[in-house]
Length: 158
Image 1 (cartoon, one colour):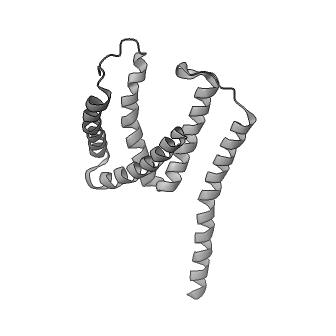
Image 2 (cartoon, rainbow, N blue to C red):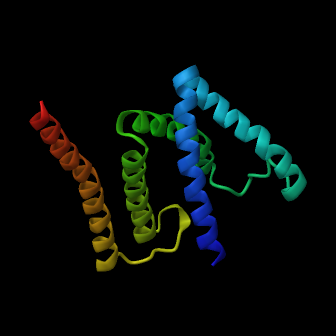
Image 3 (cartoon, rainbow, N blue to C red):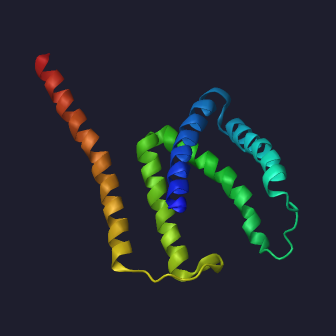
């Protein structure tokens, strides 16, 4: 149950952060926003790390060093999400991001990449991804059809 709660909280904050980032980027630019977001994240997490965790920050001797690329991924992530929202709007962009994220997670599970225990691919995973993709298509098409009908109605009145 705890995992579900944390996932819901993460989903809420991801949506809020991406919308806020996009609004900040309208004023200061994409790269300045990326610096601000990740810099503020550092200054927020450092005291929490010291108070709560207290372990050696640089004790990474037995870890695969490739995992440190996650910091670079964070930069790419913030930039790409802001661009996606700017071009597609929050709901459409986030829905595509979630499907891409889930698809990669299924591959990681299925093939046991990055030292995860492999979990076999199944028909229900395939159907679930398919339904999500179909949902995005329906989600995107429905507003377009409504807008076309509204334009037709407005043009009748002219």
